[in-house]
Length: 439
Ligand code: UDX
Image 1 (cartoon, rainbow, N blue to C red):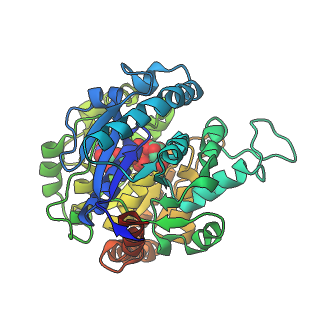
Image 2: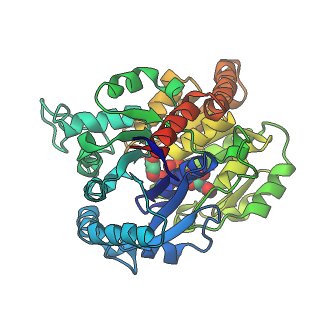
């Protein structure tokens, strides 16, 4: 017999901002389609956050490091091992608690770094869905590493390849595929039109559904009333300073620069970037996190006039990218930043650093043709002349026209896919139908 229930999804993100926020945005889409949502966050993350999202219900769980979270663990491996040991119990207790309070969950959506969540889902007879925060092309690389088809090694060996930036974290990335043959759904924070070929290929192996871009609805289809809330941030954005400054800049004149929440640049790279920006004809808004600020060249901030540029420790990135004064985004190509730039139609100058970023940059330049790549020299540094040249190409030159036009097309596409009947909307709809109809 088929009966209808109020569907209730328990969302388990990996406790980092770049993983929590896309899952939060996805949760809001599920809520919009009348699924009840509880997000399980670790106690240490909850302690760090000054403001919690008001749109969803949040419950605390333990990762075994309640004071400091990941920062308290010696290594990623140690963190993940402990989280698994403690998490199996603490997640089970939460599921029990929700059932006792009359709101049983019928599904776990988990970050595949926490693949043990599938065991908990099976124990309680719940639907399980892995949520990959990165795009399908990158997941495909990790899949091939997981299968042993690609072997990565820091040493130079004929039979094995070294992908710069990947070797240190590769085991953790490849382990995301553990338990994946047991899940009901594999959700990917991307959209079909962006990477059809790879999605079609991966869909033959796993029940893949793309559900992105995970950007608040007010920046896209505007169907979720008043939905501008971006989510958690461990840094405080300098919103007024940024928007006031941008309001005084001409249309499409500003280079926005950010390397996300984690990347650490070499001091030499910071210096080249600083001069590259200063020498370019365009004004710039540069996010330099406070831990990175000491690497700025001597007297750079003192000599910077407010006409030329603004340096802030953190900004409201979506509001910035949406601002009409922005002409291009110089980015490390973290997947969230890339998706945000695509969704808001901002062309990119890419300076990828590690993990998925070089692959994202490759797609930006060669597949979607919405940016250029600022190439490093043999020392691994992108020089000031290259930075200046790339900015000019994307912002001003005839050669950059196609890039600017393509960016506008992808913006339109990003809105369409989450709007009613778009590819991601249909996938979310299908997922929700499965949740509400339980035999
Ligand atoms: C990391 C990895 O670097 C990335 O490659 C991976 O895909 C996810 O985890 P991070 O480096 O922080 O994340 O980059 P990114 O994924 O781009 O996320 C940064 C987020 O911070 C974006 O959502 C962006 O909007 C936000 N941000 C950044 C701000 O809100 N303000 C800022 O000033 C800078």
